Each structure stands twice: as structure tokens, then as C-alpha cells.
Length: 322
Image (cartoon, rainbow, N blue to C red; front, side):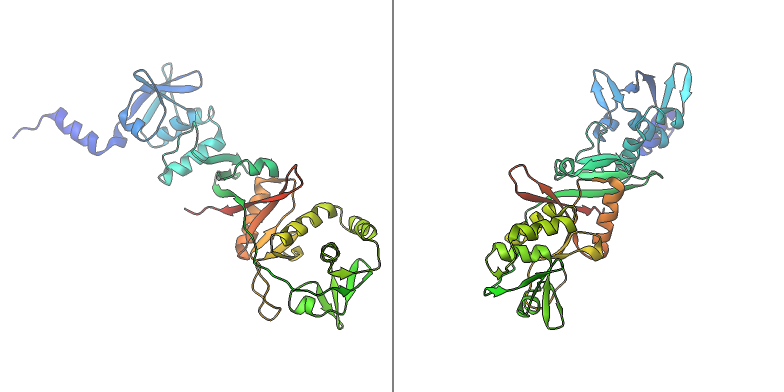
């Protein structure tokens, strides 16, 4: 049987679609090529009549795969030429997701938000990215992904503390009530006394559990002198406690608080589950560092958001693994 050469080539091209190099023309910052069902099914470009309009990022990717050849007049444009017209951050994210099998479009990127590692985001802007994935491109073109979510968890911590007396000294509250530390993990025990932090003490005073002779407002002013962001810190502490969490200092982790879901007793102390970091804004590089630290100590990162109504809400950020 004599095989028709054109038929053989057609079968070969069908089985090896990447070897069929399409031709496109560069015009007004985009690449125009003939409509291709193969590319359309793979979510490349946008259709205009019988033409397919590709973004520079899409065109650069197709050139790198040997699928597309682009002309600027009579001159063939290589990968570097096209990339110079593309947004490099968007290109690296597009390329990475495509290589992972994600048929994203450069028009929307689905729920992925491409940003460079040097970009700074305010915490309120970060909250607006709820249920989105931030795709951070570093200086070498590598991409890391982070998922942003609204945190509405509640703790399970319960207390039954009888009213007790304490003295305020040197920025701490001092009491002989050892149960506070041994059972509920308040403060720290020193020489048969429990020393409470200023925000722990103020909270117990507000709840009319701890009695001190000092005036509440004066103690609060001392807190403001010790901590530049004391108002915010105390607001976070109070909110976490109202949500039935137990909060302790997070200094060892570079955060304001480490947060426990429940305290049974000092002898049955479990690991804290969350780290709360107080920031007004964060660079993508800092965010990656915060998340990495939390992953290393098996905790979830929380950024507090201060609402206009005076409430505190939280957003969690975690690393996305494919």
C-alpha cells in the first residue's frame, strides 16, 4: 500500500502537536494568530472573529515550547524580544502554573495574584485577598504561593477563678495565687509568687476578678509607656480572651502572642496553635518569612485587622503546596 505523504505528515503532526509551529504577528503589544481550537481548549488568548489574540506572556510561553513563531514585520522575534514586552512577574507565574498543569489565563489568573517579593501590602489590602492565592516571584524568577483566609476560630479555654488581691510593681502584677499559673497558665511563677504581665492583669481587673489598689487608668498609662503599641496589643489580648483563647507572649517567635485553644493545667500543657503578628503592612518577603517560621514551629500565622466598629478580626496566611 502506498501511503500519501500529506496524510502521513498529518498523522505525525496530530500525534506531535507541539511540532506544529504556528505563526503570529506582533501588533500593539499583543500577538495575533489564526484561531486555533487546540490553544482555545487550553485557555490561551481571546477570540476575535477568526483570530486569536495572545498576550506577550502567553506568546513568550508558546515560543519557549516551540509552538509559536512571532514576526514583527519581516523580523522573527525571539523569546527575549517578546519577554521585553511582557510583565516578567506575570510571565513567571503564568509559566509556573502552566507547568503544574493549571490552565490559567493571563486575563485573570483565576484566584492567583502575581506580585514581586519587594511589593508591600497593607494588612487591610491583604484581607481583601481573602480566599485568594498570592503568587510571589523572587529575584530569580522562582514562585511561592500563599493562601489568604478569614479566621473565625474560637477557643475552648474555661476558667473559674475566685476574686483575689494583687500588687502592681515594676510593670507587673504580683500575687500569691499560684493556681493562676499552675492551672490556667497566667504569668510566670517566681519565688512562691505569680507575676502577671500588664495586659493579663488589666484584663482580670476589667473582669473584676483581680483587686489592686492602683487606679486602672494609671496602670494603663504605664503600659503605654512600656509598649509603643500597647493600645493595639491590649485590644488583641482582650479579643482573644473573649473568644476563649489563652494568649501568652510570642516574643520567642517574633510575634505579639502565641495562642492556645485550651489550657487544662501546666502539667498537661499542649503546644500553642497560632502566632499573632501585629503589623500595619507587610512586604511579600516578610510574609514569606512569617509563614515559614510558623510552619517550622507548626503554628498558623494570624494578622489582626482593626475594624472601624472597634472589633478585631484576623486573617490567616499559609503556604500552598502542590
